[in-house]
Image (cartoon, rainbow, N blue to C red; front, side, top):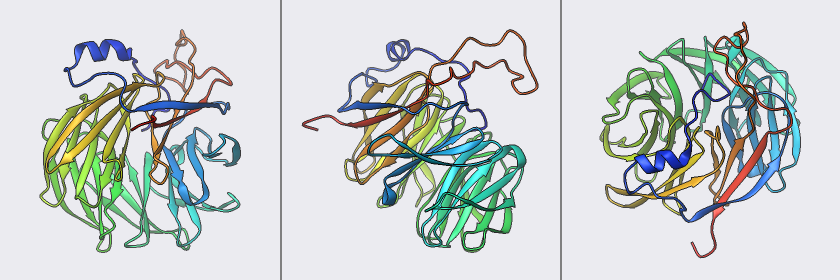
Length: 348
């Protein structure tokens, strides 16, 4: 998302009281670590790198790289002018980070974290993913209503694809198709990653403002976290929503664990909602875990079943707006930034 700090936060307990009975606390997961990472600024997407046991976190003017086993800060990719997401192009050994404030994508070395180059994308370059099938990187540019395609070997621009709406997060199906939410149109768009064109779109029926996305490639399912307080489950082979389930307020992260058959939605109210797949088209909520207010982003290492959620404390909203903060959003208290680890509880 464009903003890196919370807008309006609602206590998780009040949301649960208002929601359906399926929204109950204490799912079979718990917070096992809360590592004090520190550092200034807000944050955005959380992207695990399981092959190297690392987690990438977009932090305003850089990307922090944290050891996912110890919580130690390994290094940073810097400088970046408005860091949001990271894509890992394993085949080329390159990482790519969106630099939203100057409408660009930064290429860096996955081993050394050194910046290797920069390519112009489009206005509001935000989320970014790697598609192994086409060996291309796709950034999703909100205000430009487009996707920028980059060659990960050379870090060069391939093309920009018009999407017909404001994209948020996306996912690769690994079969030559890439999917992305259009938040302003309440749609999912399918992109042919080889022919570089939009091939399908469908409405996220029952869901408004879809932002977060996760994918179950084995069963052809997409999980769209929606700001209207639901997760919409689409069958992307059919191009239709097959289920909607309640989640928290201010969602910005989603994940899918194929082994445990659980989907996750993290939201700014401090709720991590867990949704279980029962088989067929049936899903049900396992409840929610209270993490920390503003912990609206999540990354999953499916090999360890560990989820990573950033959080911090915030000061009061400033009395006056500034050019850097026109909406008078509260700022992160220096040194309060943490990375929480959520894992299955014993016996589950």
